Length: 98
Image (cartoon, rainbow, N blue to C red; front, top):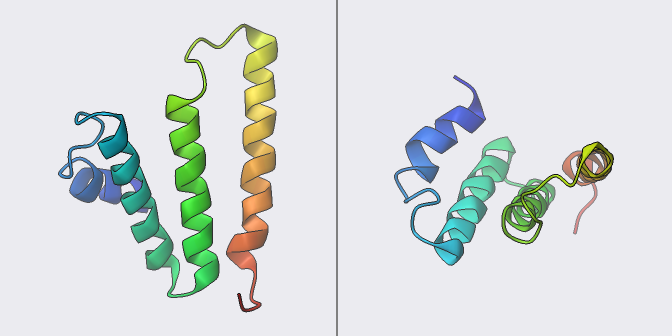
């Protein structure tokens, strides 16, 4: 079982998942991602990395329209996601102090 599947099954869904409204879903996503960050280590870079990903997941879920807008906009979203994930790797692997 992957870490994501474990957190989804044993933490996110029992907390209510996405069934309890926008605010509660955002809290559930944030808490689940925070636990994933803490699982990676007790360092600020992992916590910041997890919260950045939680914020991106919340924005993607609630702020962006669900319609893809065609293949061009789908490609743009894929490119933005790749840039974001690659940029947050710098935070994840950063060994300096905050």
